[in-house]
Image (cartoon, rainbow, N blue to C red):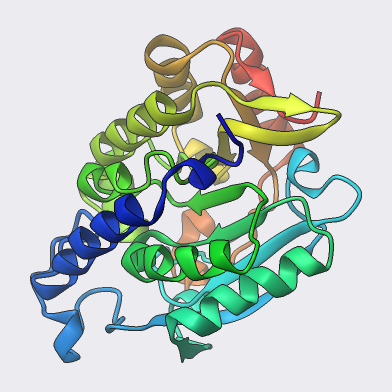
Length: 299
């Protein structure tokens, strides 16, 4: 079998996936919100996206996980908009204020090729959930032009199983952000009242597709890598998240415990989110990873 995985798919199977993905746009159910709008006709749902992909920027990124960055960087494509509405989003200008431009499949494919030409280790789709049909349409064009590096699906984990199944055998590395273990918290800060259940189902499907993370010579090639952003006052429910990963996914799951929370966007409107996390809060989260015998990404 060739790697990356998508090199094994073939044009007919790609076309079948693309056709099915486009039907999701006509009565939109690309993500768990299932807004029901016809995006192909210009109707907009929660994510405010239409028929075309919308991209904020694409460039080499050296601030991602070390196994993605390596020596030559991760080739990131930052998609505009999001299917969550996190009140503390550090990229709110992209996710909420729609900074970016619509691109067609050929232009998106060309972005991938430009990044590969710069020598990056992977193509890293950031916030791709609502734009999977557009990504699928662009990929065969990029493959025809010589794309041959792994694909990273960098997501908030509010993903539908129906859409994720279209990516089976295409995505090499899934990098979901396991954000919350409490749906009331998820609703208050991200407008997602069913987040924990959706997240668990999504990560199970991701792991079923790609398995544990495989790293060769310090570079991720395939598998699951989970991010967890520590929030003030344990609002992220770190212990429950780690318990789920250990009990229902794999003890070999790699976790990146992130300490970068800052009160961006509308966080100042919530007293419990007004300040950054403490050193002790971060260290407690790291201890939770060790308690459940999971693997820290940076060790």
